[in-house]
Image: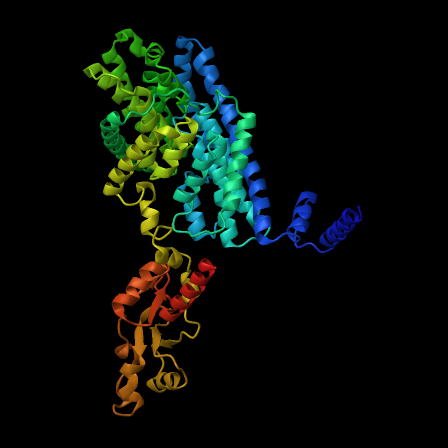
Length: 614
Protein backbone atom coordinates (compact mmCIF):
# COMPACT_ATOMS: atom_id res chain seq x y z
CA UNK A 1 0.00 0.00 0.00
CA UNK A 2 2.85 2.34 0.88
CA UNK A 3 4.50 1.69 -2.52
CA UNK A 4 1.27 2.46 -4.36
CA UNK A 5 0.85 5.70 -2.42
CA UNK A 6 4.45 6.63 -3.14
CA UNK A 7 3.96 6.03 -6.87
CA UNK A 8 0.77 8.10 -6.85
CA UNK A 9 2.53 11.03 -5.15
CA UNK A 10 5.38 10.71 -7.63
CA UNK A 11 2.92 10.88 -10.51
CA UNK A 12 1.18 13.96 -9.09
CA UNK A 13 4.52 15.75 -8.74
CA UNK A 14 5.46 14.76 -12.29
CA UNK A 15 2.09 16.00 -13.61
CA UNK A 16 2.46 19.32 -11.80
CA UNK A 17 5.89 19.87 -13.32
CA UNK A 18 4.52 19.08 -16.78
CA UNK A 19 1.64 21.52 -16.42
CA UNK A 20 3.86 24.30 -15.10
CA UNK A 21 6.69 23.86 -17.60
CA UNK A 22 5.31 22.36 -20.80
CA UNK A 23 6.97 22.64 -24.22
CA UNK A 24 3.54 21.86 -25.66
CA UNK A 25 0.12 20.80 -24.38
CA UNK A 26 -0.42 17.23 -23.15
CA UNK A 27 -3.58 15.49 -22.06
CA UNK A 28 -3.83 13.34 -18.94
CA UNK A 29 -3.29 10.04 -20.77
CA UNK A 30 -0.12 11.35 -22.42
CA UNK A 31 1.29 12.64 -19.15
CA UNK A 32 0.57 9.26 -17.56
CA UNK A 33 2.28 7.44 -20.42
CA UNK A 34 5.36 9.67 -20.26
CA UNK A 35 5.54 9.13 -16.50
CA UNK A 36 5.33 5.36 -17.04
CA UNK A 37 7.97 5.50 -19.79
CA UNK A 38 10.48 7.05 -17.40
CA UNK A 39 10.12 4.01 -15.16
CA UNK A 40 10.54 1.46 -17.95
CA UNK A 41 13.50 0.36 -19.99
CA UNK A 42 13.59 1.13 -23.71
CA UNK A 43 12.49 -2.42 -24.60
CA UNK A 44 9.66 -2.38 -22.06
CA UNK A 45 8.35 0.95 -23.33
CA UNK A 46 8.48 -0.28 -26.94
CA UNK A 47 6.46 -3.36 -25.96
CA UNK A 48 3.87 -1.13 -24.27
CA UNK A 49 3.88 1.09 -27.37
CA UNK A 50 3.37 -1.96 -29.59
CA UNK A 51 0.27 -2.89 -27.60
CA UNK A 52 -1.21 0.62 -27.80
CA UNK A 53 -0.41 1.09 -31.49
CA UNK A 54 -1.65 -2.42 -32.31
CA UNK A 55 -4.98 -1.92 -30.56
CA UNK A 56 -5.56 1.50 -32.13
CA UNK A 57 -4.57 0.47 -35.66
CA UNK A 58 -6.49 -2.80 -35.37
CA UNK A 59 -9.62 -1.01 -34.21
CA UNK A 60 -9.48 1.38 -37.16
CA UNK A 61 -9.19 -1.52 -39.58
CA UNK A 62 -11.98 -3.52 -37.97
CA UNK A 63 -14.41 -0.58 -37.98
CA UNK A 64 -13.76 0.11 -41.67
CA UNK A 65 -14.20 -3.56 -42.62
CA UNK A 66 -17.50 -3.82 -40.71
CA UNK A 67 -19.03 -0.71 -42.28
CA UNK A 68 -18.08 -1.56 -45.86
CA UNK A 69 -18.98 -5.25 -45.47
CA UNK A 70 -22.54 -4.49 -44.38
CA UNK A 71 -23.00 -2.04 -47.27
CA UNK A 72 -21.80 -4.66 -49.77
CA UNK A 73 -23.93 -7.45 -48.25
CA UNK A 74 -27.05 -5.27 -48.33
CA UNK A 75 -26.55 -4.42 -52.00
CA UNK A 76 -25.73 -7.98 -53.07
CA UNK A 77 -28.37 -9.86 -51.06
CA UNK A 78 -31.23 -7.53 -50.15
CA UNK A 79 -31.66 -5.58 -53.39
CA UNK A 80 -33.44 -7.34 -56.31
CA UNK A 81 -31.41 -7.98 -59.47
CA UNK A 82 -33.10 -5.32 -61.64
CA UNK A 83 -32.69 -2.60 -59.02
CA UNK A 84 -29.16 -3.75 -58.30
CA UNK A 85 -28.20 -2.95 -61.90
CA UNK A 86 -29.08 0.69 -61.24
CA UNK A 87 -26.82 0.63 -58.19
CA UNK A 88 -23.99 -0.85 -60.27
CA UNK A 89 -24.52 1.88 -62.87
CA UNK A 90 -24.67 4.83 -60.45
CA UNK A 91 -22.72 4.02 -57.29
CA UNK A 92 -19.17 3.66 -58.70
CA UNK A 93 -19.15 7.00 -60.51
CA UNK A 94 -20.72 8.70 -57.46
CA UNK A 95 -18.21 7.07 -55.11
CA UNK A 96 -15.10 8.02 -57.07
CA UNK A 97 -16.39 11.56 -57.65
CA UNK A 98 -17.19 11.96 -53.95
CA UNK A 99 -13.72 10.71 -53.05
CA UNK A 100 -12.14 13.21 -55.45
CA UNK A 101 -14.22 16.04 -53.95
CA UNK A 102 -13.29 15.03 -50.40
CA UNK A 103 -9.59 14.94 -51.32
CA UNK A 104 -9.77 18.29 -53.08
CA UNK A 105 -11.77 20.27 -50.53
CA UNK A 106 -11.18 18.54 -47.19
CA UNK A 107 -7.62 17.28 -47.59
CA UNK A 108 -6.19 20.14 -49.67
CA UNK A 109 -5.62 18.01 -52.75
CA UNK A 110 -3.33 15.57 -50.93
CA UNK A 111 -3.61 12.60 -53.29
CA UNK A 112 -0.89 10.48 -51.66
CA UNK A 113 -2.24 6.96 -51.48
CA UNK A 114 -1.04 3.39 -51.84
CA UNK A 115 2.00 2.12 -49.99
CA UNK A 116 4.59 3.88 -52.15
CA UNK A 117 4.24 7.14 -50.25
CA UNK A 118 4.76 5.34 -46.91
CA UNK A 119 7.97 3.82 -48.27
CA UNK A 120 9.01 7.27 -49.44
CA UNK A 121 8.31 8.78 -46.01
CA UNK A 122 10.42 6.07 -44.36
CA UNK A 123 13.35 6.86 -46.63
CA UNK A 124 13.04 10.59 -47.23
CA UNK A 125 11.18 11.88 -44.19
CA UNK A 126 12.69 9.90 -41.31
CA UNK A 127 9.52 7.75 -41.06
CA UNK A 128 7.39 10.81 -40.28
CA UNK A 129 3.90 10.52 -41.76
CA UNK A 130 1.35 13.35 -41.81
CA UNK A 131 -1.15 13.22 -38.92
CA UNK A 132 -4.04 13.52 -41.40
CA UNK A 133 -3.18 10.06 -42.75
CA UNK A 134 -4.46 8.56 -39.48
CA UNK A 135 -8.02 9.16 -40.66
CA UNK A 136 -7.98 10.37 -44.28
CA UNK A 137 -7.36 6.90 -45.73
CA UNK A 138 -10.27 5.40 -43.80
CA UNK A 139 -12.67 8.12 -44.96
CA UNK A 140 -11.57 8.06 -48.60
CA UNK A 141 -11.35 4.28 -49.01
CA UNK A 142 -14.62 3.82 -47.13
CA UNK A 143 -16.38 6.03 -49.68
CA UNK A 144 -14.63 4.46 -52.67
CA UNK A 145 -15.15 0.80 -51.74
CA UNK A 146 -18.53 1.34 -50.08
CA UNK A 147 -19.80 2.76 -53.36
CA UNK A 148 -18.41 -0.13 -55.37
CA UNK A 149 -14.82 0.83 -56.19
CA UNK A 150 -13.04 -2.31 -57.36
CA UNK A 151 -10.20 -2.07 -54.84
CA UNK A 152 -9.41 -3.35 -51.37
CA UNK A 153 -9.41 -1.82 -47.92
CA UNK A 154 -6.25 -3.50 -46.67
CA UNK A 155 -3.71 -1.01 -48.07
CA UNK A 156 -5.58 2.00 -46.61
CA UNK A 157 -5.83 0.10 -43.32
CA UNK A 158 -2.07 -0.55 -43.42
CA UNK A 159 -1.38 3.11 -44.23
CA UNK A 160 -3.64 4.21 -41.38
CA UNK A 161 -1.81 1.88 -39.00
CA UNK A 162 1.54 3.18 -40.25
CA UNK A 163 0.44 6.77 -39.66
CA UNK A 164 -0.78 5.90 -36.15
CA UNK A 165 2.54 4.25 -35.29
CA UNK A 166 4.59 7.07 -36.79
CA UNK A 167 2.67 9.86 -35.07
CA UNK A 168 2.68 8.02 -31.75
CA UNK A 169 6.47 7.81 -32.00
CA UNK A 170 6.74 11.47 -32.98
CA UNK A 171 4.52 12.46 -30.07
CA UNK A 172 6.90 10.84 -27.61
CA UNK A 173 10.05 11.97 -29.41
CA UNK A 174 11.31 8.52 -30.30
CA UNK A 175 14.24 8.11 -32.69
CA UNK A 176 14.24 6.98 -36.32
CA UNK A 177 14.61 3.25 -35.60
CA UNK A 178 11.86 3.22 -32.96
CA UNK A 179 9.64 5.39 -35.17
CA UNK A 180 10.10 3.03 -38.12
CA UNK A 181 9.48 0.00 -35.94
CA UNK A 182 6.19 1.41 -34.61
CA UNK A 183 5.20 2.52 -38.11
CA UNK A 184 5.62 -1.07 -39.29
CA UNK A 185 3.86 -2.32 -36.15
CA UNK A 186 0.79 -0.24 -36.97
CA UNK A 187 0.69 -1.61 -40.51
CA UNK A 188 1.15 -5.19 -39.28
CA UNK A 189 -1.69 -4.73 -36.79
CA UNK A 190 -3.96 -3.36 -39.52
CA UNK A 191 -3.32 -6.29 -41.85
CA UNK A 192 -3.63 -8.77 -38.97
CA UNK A 193 -6.98 -7.24 -38.00
CA UNK A 194 -8.30 -7.18 -41.58
CA UNK A 195 -7.64 -10.90 -42.11
CA UNK A 196 -7.29 -12.23 -38.55
CA UNK A 197 -3.84 -13.33 -39.71
CA UNK A 198 -1.07 -12.09 -37.39
CA UNK A 199 1.79 -13.92 -39.12
CA UNK A 200 0.75 -12.48 -42.49
CA UNK A 201 0.74 -9.01 -40.91
CA UNK A 202 4.28 -9.51 -39.63
CA UNK A 203 5.49 -10.86 -43.00
CA UNK A 204 3.88 -7.88 -44.74
CA UNK A 205 5.82 -5.47 -42.54
CA UNK A 206 9.13 -7.21 -43.19
CA UNK A 207 8.68 -7.85 -46.92
CA UNK A 208 7.30 -4.48 -47.96
CA UNK A 209 7.83 -1.76 -45.34
CA UNK A 210 11.12 -2.81 -43.75
CA UNK A 211 12.97 -3.68 -46.96
CA UNK A 212 16.65 -2.82 -46.56
CA UNK A 213 16.36 -2.15 -42.82
CA UNK A 214 17.83 -4.32 -40.10
CA UNK A 215 15.99 -4.71 -36.79
CA UNK A 216 16.88 -6.94 -33.88
CA UNK A 217 14.12 -5.72 -31.57
CA UNK A 218 10.97 -6.79 -33.45
CA UNK A 219 8.94 -7.99 -30.45
CA UNK A 220 6.73 -4.82 -30.47
CA UNK A 221 5.82 -5.61 -34.08
CA UNK A 222 4.78 -9.16 -33.16
CA UNK A 223 2.75 -7.92 -30.19
CA UNK A 224 1.02 -5.27 -32.32
CA UNK A 225 0.01 -7.94 -34.86
CA UNK A 226 -1.34 -10.14 -32.07
CA UNK A 227 -3.40 -7.23 -30.69
CA UNK A 228 -4.84 -6.49 -34.14
CA UNK A 229 -5.73 -10.14 -34.67
CA UNK A 230 -7.37 -10.40 -31.23
CA UNK A 231 -9.56 -7.40 -31.97
CA UNK A 232 -10.56 -9.02 -35.25
CA UNK A 233 -11.47 -12.26 -33.46
CA UNK A 234 -13.52 -10.49 -30.80
CA UNK A 235 -15.37 -7.97 -32.97
CA UNK A 236 -15.72 -9.40 -36.49
CA UNK A 237 -18.34 -12.01 -37.34
CA UNK A 238 -17.38 -15.15 -39.24
CA UNK A 239 -19.12 -13.90 -42.39
CA UNK A 240 -16.96 -10.75 -42.39
CA UNK A 241 -13.68 -12.58 -41.90
CA UNK A 242 -11.76 -13.80 -44.93
CA UNK A 243 -12.19 -17.47 -43.96
CA UNK A 244 -12.16 -20.68 -46.00
CA UNK A 245 -12.45 -23.77 -43.85
CA UNK A 246 -13.44 -26.47 -46.35
CA UNK A 247 -10.70 -27.67 -48.70
CA UNK A 248 -9.32 -30.85 -50.18
CA UNK A 249 -6.38 -32.85 -48.84
CA UNK A 250 -3.15 -32.17 -50.70
CA UNK A 251 -2.17 -34.95 -53.08
CA UNK A 252 1.43 -34.92 -54.30
CA UNK A 253 0.27 -36.39 -57.62
CA UNK A 254 -1.36 -33.01 -58.36
CA UNK A 255 1.90 -31.06 -58.08
CA UNK A 256 1.96 -30.62 -61.87
CA UNK A 257 -1.30 -28.64 -61.66
CA UNK A 258 0.27 -26.29 -59.14
CA UNK A 259 3.38 -25.73 -61.26
CA UNK A 260 1.23 -24.72 -64.22
CA UNK A 261 -0.91 -22.52 -61.97
CA UNK A 262 2.25 -20.87 -60.64
CA UNK A 263 3.21 -19.88 -64.18
CA UNK A 264 -0.33 -18.68 -64.95
CA UNK A 265 -0.60 -16.57 -61.79
CA UNK A 266 2.88 -15.14 -62.37
CA UNK A 267 2.01 -14.07 -65.90
CA UNK A 268 -1.35 -12.73 -64.77
CA UNK A 269 0.31 -10.72 -61.99
CA UNK A 270 2.61 -9.17 -64.58
CA UNK A 271 -0.40 -8.38 -66.76
CA UNK A 272 -2.14 -6.87 -63.72
CA UNK A 273 0.83 -4.57 -63.02
CA UNK A 274 1.28 -3.51 -66.66
CA UNK A 275 -2.42 -2.69 -67.01
CA UNK A 276 -2.14 -0.61 -63.84
CA UNK A 277 0.77 1.37 -65.27
CA UNK A 278 -0.93 2.02 -68.61
CA UNK A 279 -4.23 3.06 -67.03
CA UNK A 280 -2.43 5.41 -64.62
CA UNK A 281 -0.57 6.97 -67.56
CA UNK A 282 -3.90 7.52 -69.31
CA UNK A 283 -5.44 9.30 -66.32
CA UNK A 284 -2.29 11.35 -65.74
CA UNK A 285 -3.17 13.20 -68.95
CA UNK A 286 -6.08 14.84 -67.12
CA UNK A 287 -3.62 16.75 -64.96
CA UNK A 288 -5.38 18.83 -62.31
CA UNK A 289 -8.86 18.27 -63.73
CA UNK A 290 -9.59 15.85 -60.91
CA UNK A 291 -13.39 16.02 -61.07
CA UNK A 292 -13.49 15.33 -64.82
CA UNK A 293 -11.03 12.49 -64.30
CA UNK A 294 -13.22 11.03 -61.55
CA UNK A 295 -16.38 11.24 -63.67
CA UNK A 296 -14.70 9.59 -66.67
CA UNK A 297 -13.12 6.85 -64.55
CA UNK A 298 -16.26 6.31 -62.52
CA UNK A 299 -18.36 6.00 -65.67
CA UNK A 300 -16.00 3.39 -67.12
CA UNK A 301 -16.08 1.46 -63.86
CA UNK A 302 -19.88 1.61 -63.75
CA UNK A 303 -20.06 0.07 -67.23
CA UNK A 304 -17.74 -2.74 -66.16
CA UNK A 305 -19.76 -3.41 -63.00
CA UNK A 306 -23.03 -3.58 -64.92
CA UNK A 307 -21.54 -6.07 -67.38
CA UNK A 308 -19.67 -8.03 -64.70
CA UNK A 309 -21.18 -7.55 -61.21
CA UNK A 310 -18.30 -9.44 -59.48
CA UNK A 311 -16.14 -6.39 -60.23
CA UNK A 312 -18.29 -4.28 -57.87
CA UNK A 313 -16.54 -3.63 -54.55
CA UNK A 314 -13.88 -5.77 -52.89
CA UNK A 315 -15.18 -9.02 -54.34
CA UNK A 316 -14.65 -11.31 -51.35
CA UNK A 317 -18.31 -12.36 -51.40
CA UNK A 318 -17.83 -13.73 -54.91
CA UNK A 319 -14.81 -15.75 -53.81
CA UNK A 320 -16.91 -17.30 -51.04
CA UNK A 321 -19.57 -18.19 -53.62
CA UNK A 322 -16.93 -19.96 -55.72
CA UNK A 323 -15.54 -21.67 -52.64
CA UNK A 324 -18.99 -23.12 -51.98
CA UNK A 325 -19.06 -24.49 -55.54
CA UNK A 326 -21.86 -22.15 -56.65
CA UNK A 327 -20.20 -20.55 -59.68
CA UNK A 328 -23.51 -20.71 -61.52
CA UNK A 329 -24.92 -18.17 -59.02
CA UNK A 330 -22.53 -15.55 -60.41
CA UNK A 331 -24.04 -16.11 -63.84
CA UNK A 332 -27.61 -15.82 -62.51
CA UNK A 333 -26.76 -12.46 -60.92
CA UNK A 334 -25.56 -10.93 -64.19
CA UNK A 335 -26.73 -10.35 -67.75
CA UNK A 336 -24.87 -13.51 -68.71
CA UNK A 337 -27.87 -15.46 -67.41
CA UNK A 338 -29.57 -14.72 -70.72
CA UNK A 339 -26.89 -16.84 -72.45
CA UNK A 340 -27.63 -19.84 -70.23
CA UNK A 341 -25.51 -21.41 -67.54
CA UNK A 342 -23.55 -24.06 -69.40
CA UNK A 343 -20.03 -24.92 -68.32
CA UNK A 344 -18.58 -23.03 -71.28
CA UNK A 345 -20.52 -19.87 -70.37
CA UNK A 346 -19.32 -20.13 -66.76
CA UNK A 347 -15.70 -20.52 -67.91
CA UNK A 348 -15.94 -17.58 -70.33
CA UNK A 349 -17.54 -15.43 -67.63
CA UNK A 350 -14.81 -16.26 -65.10
CA UNK A 351 -12.04 -15.68 -67.65
CA UNK A 352 -13.42 -12.28 -68.69
CA UNK A 353 -14.02 -11.24 -65.07
CA UNK A 354 -10.42 -12.18 -64.24
CA UNK A 355 -8.99 -10.17 -67.15
CA UNK A 356 -11.24 -7.15 -66.53
CA UNK A 357 -10.50 -7.09 -62.79
CA UNK A 358 -7.11 -5.56 -63.60
CA UNK A 359 -8.81 -2.75 -65.54
CA UNK A 360 -11.50 -2.19 -62.91
CA UNK A 361 -8.92 -1.85 -60.14
CA UNK A 362 -6.61 0.39 -62.17
CA UNK A 363 -9.47 2.64 -63.27
CA UNK A 364 -10.65 3.00 -59.67
CA UNK A 365 -7.21 4.02 -58.43
CA UNK A 366 -6.14 6.03 -61.46
CA UNK A 367 -9.27 8.17 -61.62
CA UNK A 368 -9.15 9.28 -58.00
CA UNK A 369 -10.51 6.44 -55.90
CA UNK A 370 -8.70 5.25 -52.80
CA UNK A 371 -7.82 1.65 -52.06
CA UNK A 372 -5.20 -0.98 -52.63
CA UNK A 373 -4.23 -4.07 -54.60
CA UNK A 374 -4.52 -6.56 -51.74
CA UNK A 375 -8.14 -7.56 -52.34
CA UNK A 376 -8.03 -7.28 -56.15
CA UNK A 377 -5.00 -9.58 -56.35
CA UNK A 378 -6.67 -12.13 -54.07
CA UNK A 379 -9.99 -12.00 -55.90
CA UNK A 380 -8.38 -12.19 -59.34
CA UNK A 381 -6.19 -15.06 -58.14
CA UNK A 382 -9.23 -16.89 -56.79
CA UNK A 383 -11.07 -16.46 -60.10
CA UNK A 384 -8.02 -17.61 -62.05
CA UNK A 385 -7.38 -20.65 -59.85
CA UNK A 386 -11.03 -21.70 -59.93
CA UNK A 387 -11.27 -21.17 -63.70
CA UNK A 388 -8.11 -23.26 -64.20
CA UNK A 389 -9.50 -26.13 -62.14
CA UNK A 390 -12.90 -25.80 -63.80
CA UNK A 391 -11.26 -25.96 -67.24
CA UNK A 392 -9.33 -29.09 -66.27
CA UNK A 393 -12.59 -30.77 -65.24
CA UNK A 394 -14.23 -29.74 -68.51
CA UNK A 395 -11.37 -31.29 -70.47
CA UNK A 396 -11.88 -34.54 -68.63
CA UNK A 397 -9.32 -34.66 -65.84
CA UNK A 398 -10.49 -36.54 -62.77
CA UNK A 399 -10.23 -35.58 -59.08
CA UNK A 400 -9.10 -32.02 -59.80
CA UNK A 401 -8.65 -30.12 -56.48
CA UNK A 402 -10.61 -27.05 -57.63
CA UNK A 403 -10.94 -25.55 -54.14
CA UNK A 404 -7.22 -25.90 -53.48
CA UNK A 405 -6.39 -24.39 -56.86
CA UNK A 406 -8.60 -21.41 -56.03
CA UNK A 407 -6.86 -20.89 -52.67
CA UNK A 408 -3.31 -21.19 -53.97
CA UNK A 409 -4.26 -19.09 -57.01
CA UNK A 410 -5.01 -16.23 -54.63
CA UNK A 411 -1.57 -16.61 -53.07
CA UNK A 412 0.09 -16.76 -56.50
CA UNK A 413 -1.35 -13.54 -57.90
CA UNK A 414 -0.80 -11.71 -54.62
CA UNK A 415 2.80 -12.92 -54.47
CA UNK A 416 3.50 -11.73 -58.01
CA UNK A 417 1.56 -8.47 -57.88
CA UNK A 418 2.84 -7.31 -54.49
CA UNK A 419 6.27 -8.98 -54.64
CA UNK A 420 5.45 -10.48 -51.25
CA UNK A 421 5.56 -14.30 -51.43
CA UNK A 422 5.82 -14.92 -47.68
CA UNK A 423 2.88 -12.62 -46.96
CA UNK A 424 0.80 -14.46 -49.57
CA UNK A 425 1.77 -17.91 -48.29
CA UNK A 426 0.98 -17.21 -44.65
CA UNK A 427 -2.16 -15.19 -45.41
CA UNK A 428 -3.84 -18.06 -47.25
CA UNK A 429 -2.50 -20.63 -44.77
CA UNK A 430 -3.91 -18.67 -41.82
CA UNK A 431 -7.25 -17.73 -43.34
CA UNK A 432 -7.94 -21.27 -44.58
CA UNK A 433 -6.31 -23.11 -41.67
CA UNK A 434 -4.50 -24.74 -44.54
CA UNK A 435 -1.07 -25.38 -43.13
CA UNK A 436 -1.19 -28.76 -44.87
CA UNK A 437 -1.28 -26.77 -48.13
CA UNK A 438 2.17 -25.28 -47.53
CA UNK A 439 3.77 -27.26 -50.37
CA UNK A 440 1.35 -26.06 -53.10
CA UNK A 441 1.22 -22.57 -51.56
CA UNK A 442 5.00 -22.26 -51.61
CA UNK A 443 5.25 -23.78 -55.08
CA UNK A 444 2.74 -21.43 -56.68
CA UNK A 445 3.82 -18.31 -54.76
CA UNK A 446 7.52 -18.76 -55.46
CA UNK A 447 6.99 -19.48 -59.16
CA UNK A 448 4.74 -16.41 -59.52
CA UNK A 449 7.28 -14.28 -57.66
CA UNK A 450 10.22 -15.54 -59.75
CA UNK A 451 8.30 -14.91 -62.99
CA UNK A 452 7.74 -11.29 -62.01
CA UNK A 453 11.30 -10.85 -60.75
CA UNK A 454 12.41 -12.01 -64.21
CA UNK A 455 10.60 -9.04 -65.78
CA UNK A 456 11.52 -6.52 -63.07
CA UNK A 457 13.66 -7.01 -59.94
CA UNK A 458 11.58 -4.38 -58.13
CA UNK A 459 7.81 -3.96 -58.08
CA UNK A 460 7.04 -1.71 -61.11
CA UNK A 461 4.93 0.49 -58.83
CA UNK A 462 8.11 1.43 -56.96
CA UNK A 463 10.60 1.39 -59.86
CA UNK A 464 10.69 5.14 -60.39
CA UNK A 465 11.12 5.93 -56.69
CA UNK A 466 13.82 3.26 -56.37
CA UNK A 467 15.71 4.63 -59.38
CA UNK A 468 15.62 8.10 -57.80
CA UNK A 469 16.87 6.69 -54.50
CA UNK A 470 13.68 7.78 -52.72
CA UNK A 471 12.80 4.42 -51.18
CA UNK A 472 14.89 1.78 -49.46
CA UNK A 473 15.92 -1.29 -51.42
CA UNK A 474 18.04 -4.32 -50.57
CA UNK A 475 21.16 -2.25 -51.34
CA UNK A 476 22.32 -1.01 -47.95
CA UNK A 477 24.80 1.57 -49.28
CA UNK A 478 22.11 3.12 -51.46
CA UNK A 479 19.70 3.24 -48.52
CA UNK A 480 22.19 5.12 -46.35
CA UNK A 481 23.14 7.54 -49.12
CA UNK A 482 19.46 8.34 -49.69
CA UNK A 483 19.29 9.61 -46.10
CA UNK A 484 21.98 12.24 -46.72
CA UNK A 485 20.94 15.73 -47.80
CA UNK A 486 23.06 17.64 -50.31
CA UNK A 487 22.98 20.77 -48.17
CA UNK A 488 24.69 18.82 -45.39
CA UNK A 489 27.57 18.04 -47.75
CA UNK A 490 28.45 21.62 -48.71
CA UNK A 491 31.97 22.66 -47.80
CA UNK A 492 31.51 25.57 -45.35
CA UNK A 493 34.86 26.97 -46.46
CA UNK A 494 33.75 27.35 -50.10
CA UNK A 495 35.14 30.56 -51.64
CA UNK A 496 34.27 32.51 -54.79
CA UNK A 497 36.21 34.71 -57.18
CA UNK A 498 34.55 37.56 -59.08
CA UNK A 499 35.48 38.24 -62.68
CA UNK A 500 36.26 41.87 -61.83
CA UNK A 501 38.88 40.92 -59.24
CA UNK A 502 42.51 41.56 -60.13
CA UNK A 503 45.01 38.72 -60.28
CA UNK A 504 46.78 40.13 -57.25
CA UNK A 505 43.55 39.84 -55.25
CA UNK A 506 42.99 36.33 -56.56
CA UNK A 507 46.48 35.18 -55.61
CA UNK A 508 46.15 36.76 -52.19
CA UNK A 509 42.93 34.76 -51.59
CA UNK A 510 44.71 31.53 -52.45
CA UNK A 511 47.68 32.39 -50.22
CA UNK A 512 45.34 33.04 -47.28
CA UNK A 513 43.22 29.91 -47.84
CA UNK A 514 43.81 26.18 -47.65
CA UNK A 515 41.23 25.56 -50.40
CA UNK A 516 42.55 24.10 -53.66
CA UNK A 517 39.55 25.21 -55.75
CA UNK A 518 37.44 28.37 -55.91
CA UNK A 519 34.35 29.15 -57.96
CA UNK A 520 34.44 31.93 -60.54
CA UNK A 521 31.22 33.97 -60.77
CA UNK A 522 30.09 37.07 -62.66
CA UNK A 523 28.35 40.19 -61.37
CA UNK A 524 25.00 38.32 -61.31
CA UNK A 525 26.48 35.56 -59.12
CA UNK A 526 26.17 33.11 -62.01
CA UNK A 527 28.72 30.33 -62.13
CA UNK A 528 31.36 30.51 -64.90
CA UNK A 529 33.83 27.84 -63.86
CA UNK A 530 36.43 26.96 -61.26
CA UNK A 531 40.01 28.00 -60.65
CA UNK A 532 42.41 25.44 -59.17
CA UNK A 533 45.56 26.19 -57.21
CA UNK A 534 47.44 23.94 -59.64
CA UNK A 535 46.53 26.16 -62.60
CA UNK A 536 47.52 29.26 -60.65
CA UNK A 537 50.84 27.84 -59.41
CA UNK A 538 53.06 29.42 -62.16
CA UNK A 539 51.67 32.84 -61.29
CA UNK A 540 51.96 32.28 -57.54
CA UNK A 541 55.62 31.30 -57.98
CA UNK A 542 56.29 34.24 -60.28
CA UNK A 543 57.16 32.07 -63.26
CA UNK A 544 54.55 33.85 -65.36
CA UNK A 545 53.47 37.51 -65.21
CA UNK A 546 50.05 37.82 -63.55
CA UNK A 547 49.13 41.09 -65.24
CA UNK A 548 48.79 39.38 -68.62
CA UNK A 549 45.89 37.16 -67.62
CA UNK A 550 42.39 37.47 -66.07
CA UNK A 551 40.33 35.24 -63.83
CA UNK A 552 37.89 34.51 -66.66
CA UNK A 553 40.69 33.18 -68.88
CA UNK A 554 42.01 30.88 -66.17
CA UNK A 555 38.60 29.49 -65.18
CA UNK A 556 37.99 25.93 -66.34
CA UNK A 557 34.82 23.89 -66.69
CA UNK A 558 34.47 21.26 -63.95
CA UNK A 559 34.07 17.58 -64.84
CA UNK A 560 30.51 17.63 -63.46
CA UNK A 561 28.08 20.26 -62.18
CA UNK A 562 25.72 19.24 -59.38
CA UNK A 563 22.11 20.46 -59.40
CA UNK A 564 19.92 20.77 -56.32
CA UNK A 565 17.65 18.05 -57.69
CA UNK A 566 20.48 15.50 -57.89
CA UNK A 567 20.54 12.76 -55.27
CA UNK A 568 23.61 12.04 -53.17
CA UNK A 569 23.77 8.64 -54.85
CA UNK A 570 24.10 10.35 -58.25
CA UNK A 571 26.68 12.74 -56.84
CA UNK A 572 28.86 9.89 -55.56
CA UNK A 573 28.91 8.44 -59.08
CA UNK A 574 30.07 11.84 -60.37
CA UNK A 575 32.90 11.88 -57.84
CA UNK A 576 33.92 8.35 -58.79
CA UNK A 577 34.09 9.24 -62.48
CA UNK A 578 35.78 12.62 -62.03
CA UNK A 579 38.17 11.41 -59.27
CA UNK A 580 38.05 14.80 -57.51
CA UNK A 581 37.18 15.88 -53.97
CA UNK A 582 34.94 18.88 -54.71
CA UNK A 583 32.28 19.67 -57.28
CA UNK A 584 30.18 22.87 -57.60
CA UNK A 585 26.50 22.95 -56.60
CA UNK A 586 24.24 25.28 -58.63
CA UNK A 587 20.61 26.30 -58.19
CA UNK A 588 17.99 26.43 -60.95
CA UNK A 589 19.29 29.89 -62.01
CA UNK A 590 22.88 28.63 -62.40
CA UNK A 591 23.94 30.52 -59.30
CA UNK A 592 26.74 29.04 -57.20
CA UNK A 593 25.58 27.57 -53.86
CA UNK A 594 28.87 26.08 -52.68
CA UNK A 595 31.17 23.14 -53.24
CA UNK A 596 29.89 19.66 -52.45
CA UNK A 597 32.66 17.92 -50.54
CA UNK A 598 33.37 14.24 -51.09
CA UNK A 599 34.85 13.99 -47.61
CA UNK A 600 31.65 15.47 -46.10
CA UNK A 601 29.61 12.77 -47.85
CA UNK A 602 31.89 10.07 -46.45
CA UNK A 603 31.69 11.57 -42.95
CA UNK A 604 27.88 11.69 -43.05
CA UNK A 605 27.82 8.14 -44.44
CA UNK A 606 29.96 6.82 -41.57
CA UNK A 607 27.77 8.60 -39.01
CA UNK A 608 24.57 7.09 -40.43
CA UNK A 609 26.18 3.67 -40.76
CA UNK A 610 27.04 3.80 -37.07
CA UNK A 611 23.44 4.77 -36.18
CA UNK A 612 22.00 1.91 -38.26
CA UNK A 613 24.34 -0.69 -36.78
CA UNK A 614 23.62 0.21 -33.15
